[in-house]
Figure 1 (cartoon, one colour):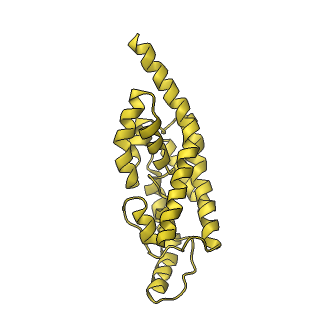
Figure 2 (cartoon, rainbow, N blue to C red):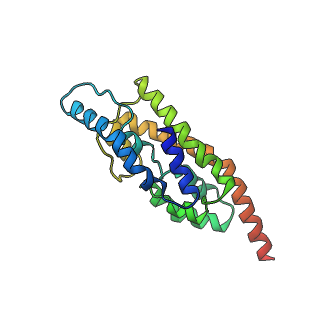
Figure 3 (cartoon, rainbow, N blue to C red):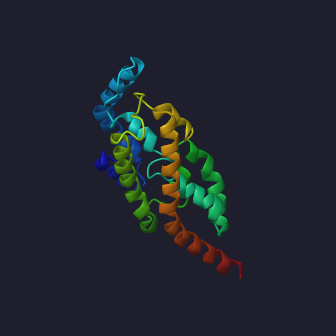
Length: 198
């Protein structure tokens, strides 16, 4: 799972839609465990599979790279006009897992500064989510397949109230992880704007 997530992030870094590239492999490996969970859930039996397609959808907060935190950072903390506007444009799509405005508008594509959290954060989220599900703190994914639902709603549909609470935690983690790197980018953009206004 970690390797597929990292591969998707690397593809996106070069401007290739990584999610579409890894989706056939994800479906091949993780659809059946999700179908088993859903059947058990509907039959009132215990679910046993953590790594499912529902797990993938639960973790795609703002799209690959968990960029919803970056969209929120831009929306609230931008000093530059450029990123204030981009934050306003990106926040609504990010709620539905769409991050193309950020990928190409910031950009994250071919941006070595933003590559650090973009590559590392999904790996951390996968490990943490697997751990809290293994410990029973977050319910296992009960749907075989996710849908493009707003953040927090999809967490509830997939794992109940524990899924929503966990997504809130992951969003806060995303905001914290992206903020220092965003501040560097924002400072550079702000300085350019100040030079241009003189």
